[in-house]
Image (tube, rainbow, N blue to C red):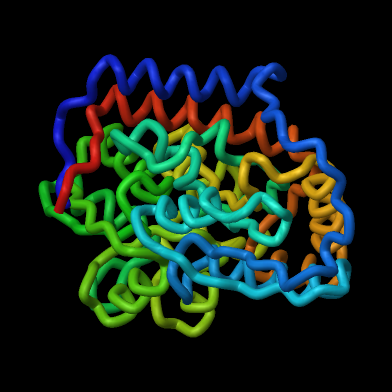
Length: 337
């Protein structure tokens, strides 16, 4: 898979339209007005994790599932439907009956896909209803123990001297990919991006030394940092992480103002009844406040956000605008493998 240097005016118009539509209050999706009835007593709830097992999306879904079962008194089944930076799993969710028994846990790629991909199999606004913003987290750039890199300064110095490095991310258009592309452009580094099909495969290769560098959410990489499997170099948020206090930020390491947090959210099919969306939102807010869930997310570096579906709608609209602009300005486009 490679990046090309062409992105049409039509794509720009589509991206801007999506961002404005998502940000405006008039963009509220008109869901069906049927009541929630016996929801959620009719059947188990399916929670689609839009990336493969082992990555942060999978882990977030599996932390939420038992807490939701407690709140809703209904079985919650996590199903991994990965591929295409979350598009395949999101598409599976949009094609499901909007009856309140299928939801999706998505990653930050959801805010980039509308501008990166020429044709999505769903309308990001009309076919999807926001439920809740689960949380945000720093992304961490780590080095393989076989890379010879032990600090960000060493990486910067060698990159400035002309050495080429390869870094892996969970896929083309992920915030990890775009954050490192932005850093490389700003610094003039010659870095090669290697896209993976999720965090699990990415970490397997950096642990095995098949790729020199990897960028992933703190949630994904922290266990491997603690086990000594990888070397943390720098984080992408403006402030240091309490969970990794000795890891510097990119901003304090010679690139002031740099910030690119990862995020996770729960979505539903667009025509899901508003009463069901509201009930699921309330259940998720309660789950996020439970000591067990809060502690698990805190331990992995996720700052819980929660809030209303409208909070998530506004957040996604801003993500589409910010990163879509970067994709277009830098002529980043996904092409067939």
